[in-house]
Each structure stands twice: as C-alpha cells, then as structure tokens.
Length: 120
Image 1: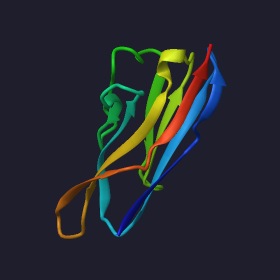
Image 2: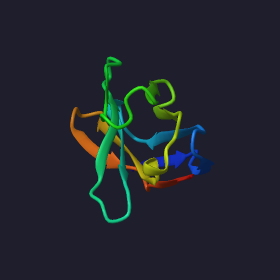
Image 3: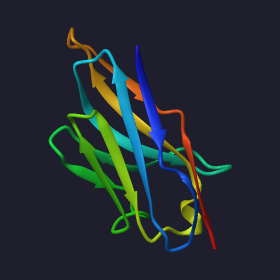
C-alpha cells in the first residue's frame, strides 16, 4: 500500500511564499514522474508543474518564473516552492506520482489535496 502525504499549505498574503511537500511511503521500487496540480473553486483541475525522474521540469504558463518544482529521490518527496503568490493561485493543490512497483508495473497516485489561500 502506498500513501502520499502533503504538507505546507495555508494562508499567505499576496507576494508571499509557500513551500509544498509531498512524501510517498509504502511498497514501491521508485518514483517516475512527479507533478503538482491545482483546482480552484468552480474550475477544472489543471497542471501546475512536473518533473521527470531525470530532473527535467515543465511549468504551467501562469506560474512560470514564480514556482519551482524539485524532488528528493532518496526521500521519495516532491516539493513546490511558490513565490510571488497571487490571489489567483488560491486553490487546492494535489501532488501526483507515477510509481514503479517491484515487478515493473506502474501506477498513478494522488495526494489528498492541500489548501493554498492567497489574500489580496
């Protein structure tokens, strides 16, 4: 069984920073791709940032230059450093991990979601 535990969300003023973490635990061989998504009220879930096992990153247009995704493979953890936060960044943030099992199979896992609220 695999668990993803997110932390680091909360309330921050516009222009402030937050750092989200998502740690995976359980029985798996290694993590492949890792990513963060977000969903604002009344909107569809959208990709925020992703990072491959090799460290290549991609960002949504609205967060480029402000957010940074990173990973610690030894800890099976993905991070999202969010700077210069704007009220429109307010959403529930979800981590996503593509995990590889000991038999080679792959499976997607989602975190429980963590609230980020940016006040103006």
